Image 1 (cartoon, rainbow, N blue to C red):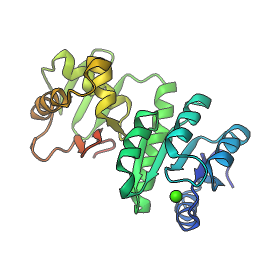
Image 2 (cartoon, rainbow, N blue to C red):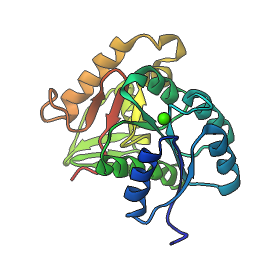
Image 3 (cartoon, protein in one colour):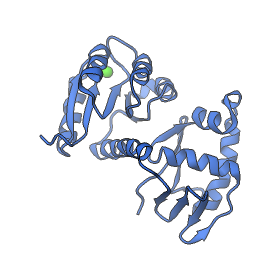
Image 4 (spheres, rainbow, N blue to C red):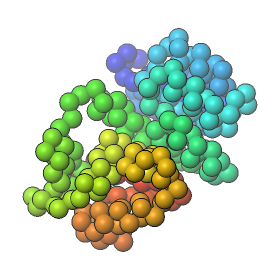
Length: 232
Ligand code: CA
């Protein structure tokens, strides 16, 4: 096993899901350590120093939100939560408690690998010096706060730019309505989702070829928005 490959801590009580995750991740050379409950997971986090955590929200001993909060108190590691369709609300609470992204069961291995790659990139981005962002035709010069589609500079308002820069910081990952509203307008506006609809609509009109079928600014229904990363 290659020690330089990322070490992933998998906290999941369902052995079938664990088997599936193990086989699709080890195919890529990623290393895995497993826990079948929250307590063991948190112990492994401290003893084995993983690079990333995959956390099932339905665990036998602790609820997923408490595990997420505890993980966040202990580290800044990227956390991907796995939720069943019946756990919609828990998923949003876990994201607001600090999880970075989610996958709804059942999911495919392609989807899983794309999410993990975006997660691990978040880590290298927060360490590295990050001056510009590119995906598809979209290019953002973060040092000069300028936004381009192909070579054309767009006129972007300060609020639009703030929204875009938050999504860039989490490129490829979901950002909840609450996170966006809190960061741009302040905690007293967490229920003003119409602000987001208006400003995301404006941004889409500037960035997207077809705003009704966005390529960059994706809607995660009931949860938030995701900036597509790694587009050709
Ligand atoms: Ca479970």
